[in-house]
Amino acid sequence: MNSNQTPPPEGEEPTEREELRTRDIVMRYFEDSALWPVLLVILAHVVAVVAFILLLAARDRNFGAIGAAGGLVYLSFKIMRWEWREQRMLRTLSVTVVVIWILSAVAAYYGHKYHFL
Image (cartoon, rainbow, N blue to C red; front, side, top):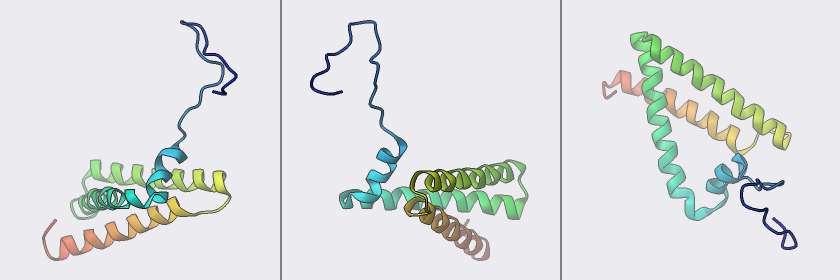
């Protein structure tokens, strides 16, 4: 809201709402170096969950895990397409998604090989 605008009367919604966009929320973790430890913990948890889903889908042929893996693939492509539309190139989020998939596949492989997953 600009400084020259007055707030709308009670019961009415403002004509222009400043909403936090996904880019503002997500990219804050990549841009602010103070939040990098939080980002690493979040990414480690995502890798662990995706690795477990991949292991269940591949080893046990669990239909729920296969569906979850398919949903994650769809979500990954949706994130990459969103970033392509916003910035006209694949950058931070797309690289992060690819790294998550690679680390998850490696963790699932070694988890199966050494029986810790």
